[in-house]
Amino acid sequence: MGESSAGGAIEVRGLQKSFKELHVLRGVDLAVARGSIVALLGSNGAGKTTLVRILATLLKADGGTAYVNGFEVAADGADVRRSISLTGQFAAVDEVLTGRENLVMVARLRHLDRPGAVADELLRRFSLVEAGGRRAVTYSGGMRRRLDIAMSLIGEPPVIFLDEPTTGLDPEARLEVWQAVKELAAGGTTVLLTTQHLEEAEHLADRIAILHDGRIIVDGTLDELKRLLPPARVEYVEKQPTLEDVFLKLVGGKS
Image (cartoon, rainbow, N blue to C red):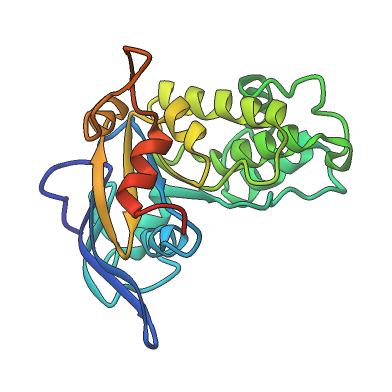
C-alpha cells in the first residue's frame, strides 16, 4: 500500500487501455490536487468513462500506473474503493423509497452509527429537507441527481468521481447540481468531473484537462487554456477566446 510520490488525490502516469484493436487510452498522465475540482473534457468516445472506471477499480489498465488517495489502483483496490465514490449519468436512487429512506439505507449498508442523523445532515447540506419525506419518484431531475450525489457521500469518501452528472438535465436542474458540486469541494472533497458541457467545466473546475486521441493534450486553469489562443480582434476590440474556441482548436474541430 504505497503512497503516491506527489501526495495528490489522483496521480495517473502513462495509463493505457485497449479493447481488442481499439486503443482508447494511449498513455494518459493526470494529477489532481486534494480538495480541487478537475474537469475532464472530451468528445464522445474519447475515453473519459474508461479512465474513470479504471480509477474506480471497475476496469484493469493494460499499462501505466494510477494512484487514488495514495493507494495504487492495481495493487490496493480495496483501499481505493474505501476512498472513493462514483456517481454516473443515471441516478442510483430507489424511487419507491423517500429521499431520507434512500440515505438511511445506504448509511446502514456502510455500517455507520446513527444512520438517521447522517441522512438528516445530508438532506440539509443538499437543500432536500422539505422533500426528505417524499418518495423519490416525485422528485425533479435536479433533486434526484442531488440526492444521488448525497448518497455517494455517505461515509465521507475523500475522492468522488462524477461521470457526466448533468446529462439529460434542464438548465435549472444543472445549476442545482453545480451548486452541490461546489459545496463538495468547499468541504474538502476532491472531485474529478467528466463532462461534454464546456460551460460546466468553465463554471466549476479549478483545472481543466482535455482528453483527445487517447491522451491528455492539455491540462491547466481556464486562464492558462485561453492563453493558448491569441485574442481575436472584433471592430478593434479584443475578444478573449472562450473555452469552446480552445477545445475545438485543440481537437481539430467538431468530431
